[in-house]
Length: 397
Ligand code: PSV
Ligand code: MN
Image 1 (tube, rainbow, N blue to C red):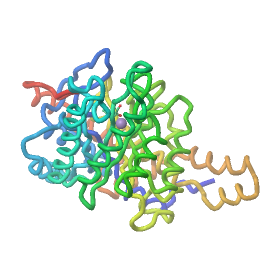
Image 2 (image 1 turned 135 degrees about the vertical axis):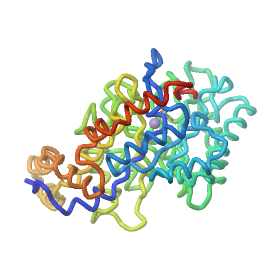
Image 3 (image 1 turned 60 degrees about the vertical axis):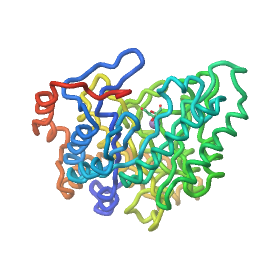
């Protein structure tokens, strides 16, 4: 059985960084209804103010991902300053080529060269924004695909995609990266142009070292073994980022670790085993540098506490993954002890890591109980009061 509070876990838990998405703080939801909440940010600056509360109470969430054009502002350098003044940094820039009229038949894979050009201009503009914000990663997700067989040529679309990716990759600076996200379906229902990790991996392989795969945990067919994908991509040096969230059915965008904390543990264990967790003996200097981002929508639950809860869920899965006795596991595996090996994993998973994480937070100058600390802080009441006027930010704003 693992020790209850092993000090050896602390460096990795202290070193962990979880990136929160700007859009989690705004109004968002399903295609049926977005339930507006009082106190929601009206500007990207106010989204950062909310993100700063998550970091203040957890101590491990200093990065915030942007989505363009939702987070467009006149001066991205000034936005980076706004972040810095609150102890934050700007994280991945998410390109959005899925909401404008022209993109009805796709963006970079559209049969019309003028639409492809417009989409590519946007991707390049996102790199300009990264230059101003100091962001490392350009995150690309394409809604491109087909609703009907025969609607367009599947292979021609792959060629158009490859050309766009190549052009944008060329535009990246030496310390910048492109992470290519895949999704099985939605909004395209017959064929999506980047439907799975294999397609993303094949494109990233051709693009070279600046391109890596982004695994959104909600973007697979039910029953898919995501930790296998993670283990494989890490082994090939091609895992760049996670979009963490929970799903019960499709791309549900619920809080990470809410639907299946055991799956999140299994994923984090493979990340650890593959050297993807800084501060562990498995991770080397200049290792895989994986971005652990959340990609969530909080439609019915209060947003800031939901992000705090998600961060804590990722921390718990990570702590349990770190608890796995690798030596005992290897011995059981090598001797063919099926049940013994399984028991090593389950012993770690079944350990209550909450007291250990409370200690880590205290060491980081955060709160032992971030949810309670946030509730006591008065921030929720303050934003409802201060943000009564104006238009709340949301999808498309
Ligand atoms: C697509 O479903 C996605 O996962 C992409 O990451 C988008 O950028 C994001 O959701 C928008 O919420
Ligand atoms: Mn995503």
